[in-house]
Length: 238
Image (cartoon, rainbow, N blue to C red; front, side):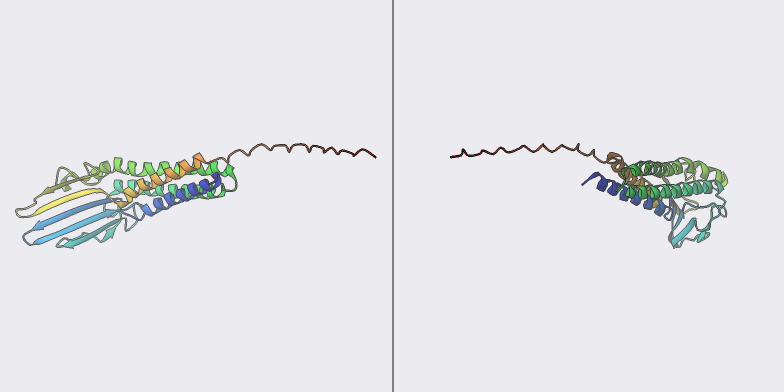
């Protein structure tokens, strides 16, 4: 396969990575789950958080099973009084959108580089930026979320010493009254992991664009040998 074909493959891979970035916007990035068991029955409450604007309804969604109940079916960070958490979700939302746009444009340049190797440079640069954003977004989300949750959830409302305000991943249990046990788990949702998958795919596409960004040099033309004359022998006259 010529370098131009390999650049096309790299561009398609970058496009796939960009699509995964935009898909991550619509998938939960954080999940908080409470499983309650008692002599009267058991139930589970699951709260999923999405990237989005602080006042965007539906960025926090709640579902239940069994005897559990939700305070809401869906709401916004602002209405839930999670303003600091909402700022992180909003920042992640913008980073994902910018990463998708740059990756998409980079893929277009990569496809165009099939006919013109000079366009591989912009494709490579945009792909690298999209790749960096795909990595920074989940890392930043993980590093800053516990602090934001700590600011948003007053200590009086914390039923346990450990929770989303103390770590990004975790689990604990407590018994609010005799005979009732509540098991809590919290951590990353599917969208958070998907951003890392997008990073790996973008990395593969960027490597291909880098390795085959130039067409091989054309072989130097070889001068055709000069034609040699043919001698003819004239038979002696009789």
